[in-house]
Length: 112
Length: 292
Image (cartoon, rainbow over all chains, first blue to last red; front, side, top):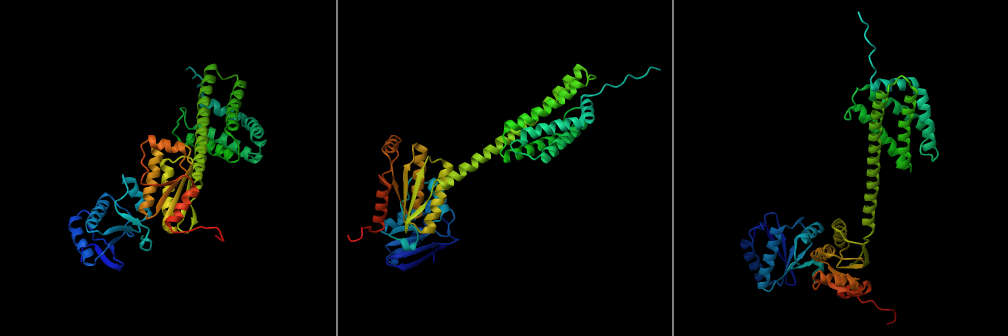
């Protein structure tokens, strides 16, 4: 059990990550290792990060996503975010200097 | 014991007296002129003109009674200005213009002065003081009306701009999962905000996978416009859709190069039709003529 994170294998090598209220994105170091351990244990090829409950993605949260993506890459796992809310996408696009390193999909049914 | 000399009448008293003695005559002149100015174009009915004339005389009398010195912050002064504000707004709403109103206000002032001339008991100094007093009041009224007129015009222009912004970016679902967004004119910050908001909401509601942004109608591009375009493409990507930029004319391409704008990460096509083909290709949709 990782605090603030719910992980579910959803088939085809995909693992769904649903962040909860207890997630502290300012301390990514303590979170990435157990997430990676779960992914490797389940032989995951893709981590699907569900953003549907996030109204806003600030710099701290974005840094956590980037960190998690970098860790997944090392383990040859692709990270894809899904269900980013329009307001969150709008606000994030204003602060980003370049495209995010991870992939984004509309929802879980639109994974490529 | 010497008898006290009769106290000299103040400017306000002279004007009040003038109004009291000639109220019928003055109001008749004002009404007649009002009908000739506002009645010809049916801006006001005769009853309205008469009501306005009487209300004006009442408010002016109240103002003159309020004190020897004109208090521009006083309730009476505010009431008179508000009266003219409402009056001019009504004229404006009914299609009248400022010229008619200013002519009317000048006429009101002239009517008082003409009646004053007829009163031989008023000294030159007093006549001068009255002229200054009336000039001050009527100038303020014209300024007030002018401000209201400008505010009205600004509101209309803003509303028209807003409407234009809303209608100039029609987002269309041209195929299931494919949106087209033709941009016409220029992209400033406020318009980008509206377009992006609408676009992102449509991506979510239509479950769009590809957005074709056509800039054929963008006449000029500068660093700000290109920055806004990139922002829009990035936000589309964050939502999980792909953006295809089409209709980049040679002069726009040249401008982008000279601005050092890197579009290498953006899928671009010369024409909207090419953009649609690319969108279909990405979605593995094949469009063919029947029988082929």
